[in-house]
Figure (cartoon, rainbow, N blue to C red):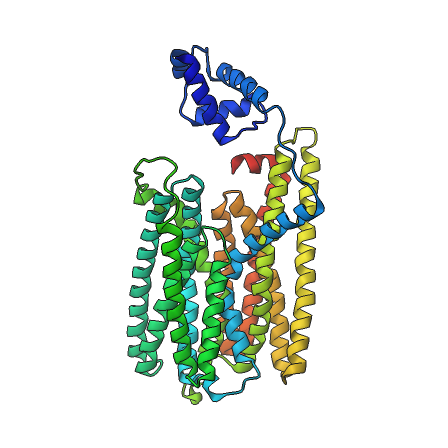
Length: 509
């Protein structure tokens, strides 16, 4: 009887890790399964968990004496790294696709009046897009984080339930905020009433799309979402050639995207694998979820607010003589769009660099000792600075190429190029701050990230508003640069503190 129980617990340990490093790791696995010294004594006859672990480790060592040889061919290494790169790249890039698509459409050679939105409609639609990402950004963070935890645990049903509740809550909050914005727009007569209603619908559709994309990205393959946006973009192009107005084409393409997303959700989750155990799982208490997830929700909201604060400041500084209440100067918008185009591509590459950095850190920490801990710290510092140099080089190369290309293809004013260069500097500094945030998040230090990004956002918003209203709308970009500087410097200080004690930071996480 005891022999059968011993075989069962051995199988349980093997299912978790068939190649444990030593019997201490086996001890940790057994304790994680709920076994105590008393249970081990009564059911297995061993004096404690450690003695049982030593016995099981010997059994495993006999059954799996060596690990299977890995295929370390150059092609296999390249293919594996390419998979990792595409996976990490896609997580950020999927939310950049709509911005890049709109940028291409706005600067395409197809000069047709149907591509141009009326100024009174373009401004509220821009605000609707920004607000959808700001509100949706917070829920994307908590959906991705909590859903991935449950899926990694094999609890598919619990992941579905949690993500479903987050989407419903997010949609409810989006509706409330949209309704408040609509009332405010009516009260202040910010835009024509029909354009306000259209923008509110546009905002709700986009908010739902972002949150559902967060749910879909939980399960591989990740290329499904880019494919959906690609198909929607092709539909939009077809509609434009059929002489459908740009706005109607956008709405039809968005509804088409939403339909495809709902269909993909049904395929991925309705017909997915069942729970690891056939046990009905219950959601954690709301208070506990709120406490653990509010830092990540706040980060998602502040992250997108930071990106758009300068545009909102510049748009609100428009002269009353224009007859518009909100509109972004075309030179400013074009310059910042050129800089944003670089950011959207390079932040996704930064995600991959962060993944490799943390993978290296975790791997080296497993074999570190007190004698070589300082060497590990020095190596991490070198690795970190190399990543920073790589990001700077990529911004310099890609930014020069983009500005040069559009300067030759279109007639860009000196003011537009100046704004683009300032924007590139700001986005580069902001990217370094985001790299620091990724490292701190990986080490379970979200509060430190909020302490860095919230003051940086406030500097961005208030200085950008002050500069744009006192001097000119172009100076809103300086508020963005100064806010990004604070965010990066503060987060850099925190990253240096954890790099100095990498073993403790790894243990505390």
